[in-house]
Image 1 (spheres, rainbow, N blue to C red):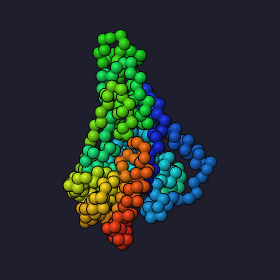
Image 2 (image 1 turned 90 degrees about the vertical axis):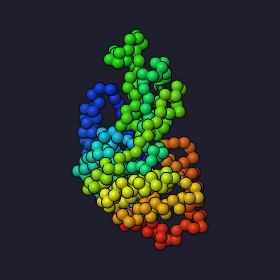
Image 3 (image 1 turned 180 degrees about the vertical axis):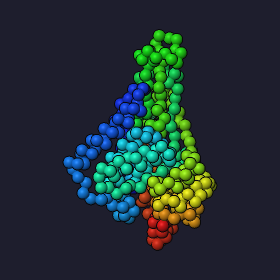
Image 4 (image 1 turned 60 degrees about the horizontal axis):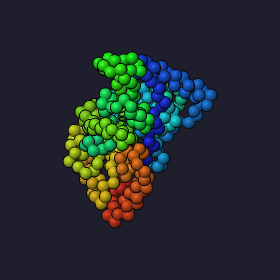
Length: 336
Ligand code: SF4
Ligand code: SF4
């Protein structure tokens, strides 16, 4: 598995469709207050280790907020709590408001306890095939009113919120029948593309909308002094797309301390592909280089057998007769 922990499900989320933002702001204050009083009664007495030391020791822990999860309020809360817990890194979407939320959470944690600032990592992709970069979408008005709404129940992020306009008395959409119609749908900023809702819809109404993070906006984020690392998600099957992304990022890549590449098992060509990518990156790779080889993307979310696959992948890599010699591998893994 990658040296990371999957994000816990976002914090419990109770909502109606109105007044939500205000309630979330109040909740951040409430969480800060609870954490503050907990820390006062159980003081944090040790400064956490530096992220790079954790990487070298093999106990690096990363909070994955989700490459597509963009709910700033929950991201701020998660960043606050996990910073206090001592994570080495917080991985989030390459989006300005998300990065701001992560840093707000970290700042709040540092005001509460003596913790080492975790690195902030932003996640980008080089093509639309990586499952991290998609959102579910459907038109609720297309849904049969008598649907039992399994999509709502299965979503781990509470990203699907539906209500019947007849029960709310809201007929603003122009419904003329007494039964009303469904309103709401996917809360885009909360959907992180896990895919659980797609197969459960009995009417096949849900589709995936894929996207690529804008390299120009990403470059601007990389130049900020509160962004420390980037994770490039690639399928490993289109080197030219990896090259295009790398070129688009230009010298902004020199601002980060670590470049991680997340790549699935691409069979026999895995090492060749990694070598080609490394050659592309080498001249502008100032910081550390980390490879996140989960075996398959979204391994914490989709399907059974991800751990077995990851172990099989690791064993295959280790058994390769032409794998890089130790010195090269050390440079490969820890280039700075
Ligand atoms: S893909 Fe579906 S189940 Fe997964 S987070 Fe998005 S809306 Fe929820
Ligand atoms: S399960 Fe399908 S039809 Fe039913 S509410 Fe969800 S998207 Fe609509």
